[in-house]
Length: 143
Image 1 (spheres, rainbow, N blue to C red):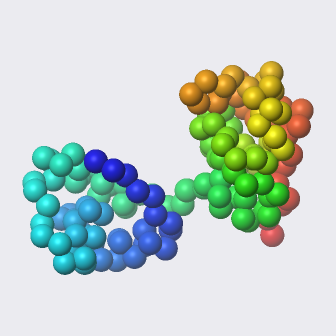
Image 2 (image 1 turned 30 degrees about the vertical axis):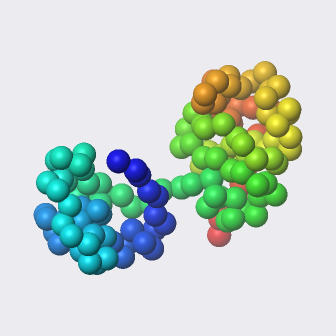
């Protein structure tokens, strides 16, 4: 089953249209779009209890794109991890790897691929986190 990501305002809108203890994000969208009800949710892989619990508990989630915009980072691709240790691979350059306090910027793919402090495979592992890297820059303080 495909997954989608939605921003905070869409998520809040979905929650406003959900029927408590009954709906999942999928069932809300199907109802509002006028689509026929889906087959039993268990058959299509949706776990209603887990989805409802997630809808109630998710408050705010950082993304690299949000941080790129908020701090006007001069990059095309920006990835985020809460511990600054595990990332997807950067695809577009300049790019940045971010944690909650700062970022590492890579101007070229070669610079990224040849950084000896990164363990690059299908994913990128940064032992000790990006904050231990000598090129790490902290974000300006928020007011």
